[in-house]
Amino acid sequence: MKSPRKFFEPLAIGAPQPLREPPVRVERMIHFVPTHLEKVRAKAGDMARTVDVILGNLEDAIPADAKEAARKGFIEMGQKFDFGSTGLWTRINCLNSPWALDDITEIVGTIGDKLDVMMLPKVEGPWDIHYLDQLLAQLEARHNVRKPIQIHAILETAEGVKNVEQIALASPRMHGMSLGPADLAASRAMKTTRVGGGHPDYKVISDPTADGGPRTSAQQDLWHYTIAKMVDACMSAGIKAFYGPFGDIADEAACEAQFRNAFLMGCAGAWSLHPSQVAIAKRVFSPDPKEVAFARRILEAMPNGSGVVMIDGKMQDDATWKQAKVMIDLARQVAAKDAEFAAAYGF
Ligand code: GLV
Ligand code: MG
Image (tube, rainbow, N blue to C red; front, side, top):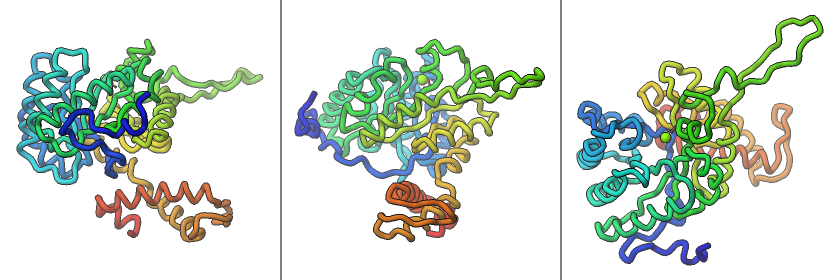
């Protein structure tokens, strides 16, 4: 294990100082853009104004013969638009693919100063992060990039899940992690062909009744265990957890339920694969104004954060004060970015 002092040293002479505290940013949706398509690229500037993060996707869903066009398209998009406070991310190809090295070197060499986060797929252990960490430092030094590019891992292999805590702690560059339910299902030999969401056969059923009447059953959440494990690994490392893709674009209710479960369990955002999912993510990952109003009452009733009070018959103490603070801190960040929510929260 590296000594704590060395942990925060730049990995290359001339590379920027690693971040001690990650920047505070609202990242309710990471919007995926297939950058090999000219038509989609042309709209990226407008799209960037409606999302928190815009991501040029170079990996899965990009055909092998369009990989270079997607990389070049992403670079062109990064050069052409001013993204303001919207995050600019890319998902590169995985490290053992023929494209990863050129993805990393060409992107950092051209738009390294504009890129906020590099998303790395199929991360299996801290060694993948260490490799990218070192290479990014060398490239930042070579191209005079002044702010460190952060790394976001996709948690989408059984081995990655097994090593999730070490991945979260692997580098000060770690921004966070997203659950990748499609690759993870394949890696674990789960018997589902869906991208996220539940499955009608993964359920609990009530006991048989004496009269042989119908038994009630309810679908369970296939992703509960992994999301919980990911959230604990991320939060204990001071980084952020995200739900990844929801593939059934037409089923907005199921997408919303999946996003909301992730939000309630501690996730900061999710991927949007289609403009319709942007609105869902915005709604879900911004705290509910009614919850914010209640949280405010808790903070007001306990100005120094300790003691015990009753509000509407509910006990409040130091721990619920902290819960309320999580809600209010997030609401303030969202309000600072989004006038619509500032009004709804009364900030
Ligand atoms: C995302 O990359 C997934 O595999 O679900
Ligand atoms: Mg994947």
